[in-house]
Image 1 (cartoon, rainbow, N blue to C red):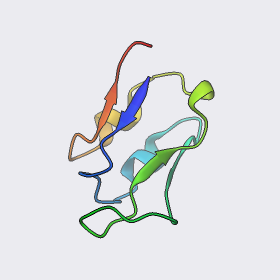
Image 2 (image 1 turned 60 degrees about the horizontal axis):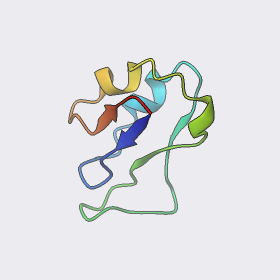
Image 3 (image 1 turned 90 degrees about the vertical axis):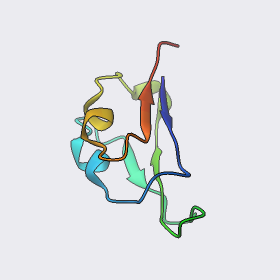
Image 4 (image 1 turned 90 degrees about the horizontal axis):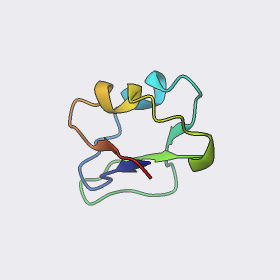
Length: 67
């Protein structure tokens, strides 16, 4: 299961580019407390928990856990 700490996300988009299945995007409809569009998962069921996004995130905003 993938969890994004949206309050810490600075919207850099590195996780979006790292996802091999292209399941992440920057949420253009929301802004976090720091003024950034946070990353969000578009299809939770399709996520394979490969950890590419979590390993790429420079601010450690993404956590992968077992469901």
